[in-house]
Amino acid sequence: MATINGQDEYQLSGSTECGGEATSTIKPGERFIAREFSGGEKDWEVYLKSGISGSIPGNRIRVLPDEPLAKLNYESCKKEWRKLQSKRITRTDVVAYSAKKYHGVPNYYKTLVQASEGDAKAFAQFNSLYHMDGEAGEGHEETAWVLLHVAGDDTFAKLLQSSKVREGYAAVFSSESFLPISNPKPYIKLHFPKTYAILYGNAAQQTQADQKPIEEVKARAEAGDAESEVELGLRYTNSEGVAKDQVEAVKWYRKAAEQNYPRGQYNLGVGYYKGEGVVKDQAEAVKWFRKAAEQNLARAQYNLGVCYYNGEGVAKDYVEAYKWLLLGARQGDEDDKKNMTELESKLRPEQIAEGQKRARDFVPR
Image (cartoon, rainbow, N blue to C red; front, side, top):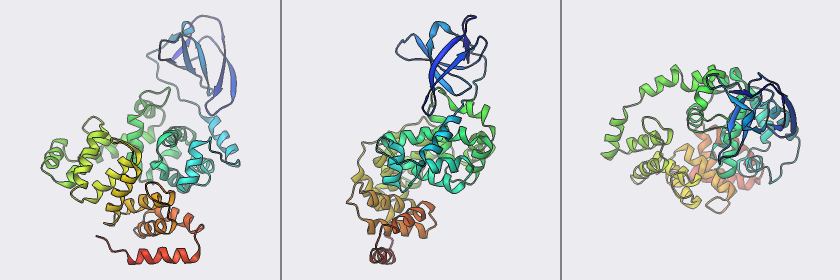
């Protein structure tokens, strides 16, 4: 935290978090979050409790290192989401455009508004976009941080309790930084205690306690046990007992994949799809998704269906996409069900029938 250095007020010209110019008078004694710009610039970036941020000269900053960080204000974002949900999405809105065009979420901002109000289905739809990559993926991850604030601790914690993605949020919020918060975990513990308890508290600690010691996992993996190879890869991905290292994770996923272990094939495919730990290669991602999908792994069937739907790494083929999504949906995968319903609206009856026939004829390898 910080305050103004000196007895004079400071007129800040800045903006709210989700756009829009704004001004504010910072009074002596007022507390705010301050971050020094990199590169030796003289100005500091400040974040006021009102939700306005901007830059002021460093000589006007007095740092208060012993004070806990204030809670960031993202209220302007929900107002902006409400406006945007009724507007046409353009290519310049990379996240919303990608969500609609490639991932079956037609109105990204409506989904955000509904999720922020505790709608579990909207939250599941929001989480289905985890596989977006590049600029869209980074933007979506940052939006998850904003959603935490807009929803509030009670609502977000309830959404997490009924979600299968708690581990994903725990990993992201502990390994990433969200300006101006360089270390989110203590910040979440202070301002979102219920969410923190779900992600990192007793239940999460018990899950970690139930895990095998890392030395045992390494020994089994090095002995060639495919299940342990995947588990070790996940430890490197999620920074559990070892430093986060996606290159090392991919190495172990590949070892399991080459033993024809479907979870290894799936995780290796994700690495190629996202370009994490390996050079991005969607055709190679499809290759490994297919190997796992043919062994009836529902999540791989979903990803393979999405690749056919979007024409990523393979020629676009809605009928083949429908087949794989249908196979995954039959195993209870909610993302498959949602995307299958979306796809049905684009198919003729004879195409749906052909997709259903291909699914009936499918025999796991």
